Amino acid sequence: MTRSLKTTCILAGGLALLVLLTGPHDVRAQDPKTAEPVKEKTMKKADAPANDSKKDKTLWEMVKSSGWMTIAFLGVIGLGSVYAGMVIFERLATLTAEKMMPSGFVTALANLVKRGEIKPRPYQDLCEQYPSPLSNVLKAGLHRAGKPNAEVEKGMEDAIARESAILKRKIRPLVELYYVGPLVGLLGTVIGIIVAFQAYKSGGGSSLKQSEEFASGISTALQATAGGLFLAIFTSVFSAWFNVRGEKFLEQFDEHLIPAVGCIANMEVVYTLPVAPTAAPAAPAPVPGSPQLVSASN
View 1: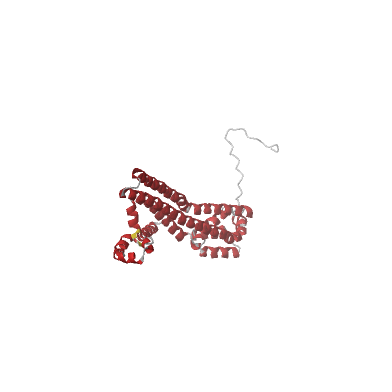
View 2: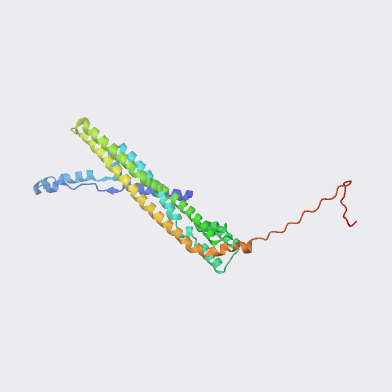
């Protein structure tokens, strides 16, 4: 991921988090006064605007009123959400048909196969011109040029398996966040419930402060659970979608490369240079003073 793309993802994630936290959310519950007689409702009508204004809170105000523990757990979940957003934006920008199998590469490869090109150099130049996962698979086939079709296909299949592993490795952070998010939320739930029952146990809920502590613990438990589930849901959806999209591209590799297998298998016959014959070693010169063999004819 380039530095500019990382910066853009961080800014976008921060802006989305800011809008989520500062946007107005109506948390008013159903007014229990609706069940009162009309006369009583009329008498309390003057107090309604003041009470309604107190009940209107933003999500950030709700989090702050829940205490530092809720802020800590939701902060961890928020950081995970921002990182997941960065991974998602990077995959959306790179996991495209043009990046995986460029149209220029596909067209040029089809032209080479159509005219029956059996020299490796045009194929190698094409791979260097269009670096991509599809060209990497073709390079693996070129490494087995001149061998039977089955061996060329095996080399390409191994290369496709490597490309599949690379695609899965790049979305692995989403899979890890899918498992970690609910665990963080569950930890916040357990701690929030512990705090709530400790507050209730200490005073039995008789004082206003103890009641507020009890409500704060329950609020921490529920908000942590909601945050963990939110992180797990959207990371699981995007990781599954990226997996399906990557497998779809890899399946299309066969459609473009299978026609070239025959040309690659016939390359060695034409392109391999003949081996030059080696000359016989010359006989050593006689050493002066040594006995010489004389033929019988002399």
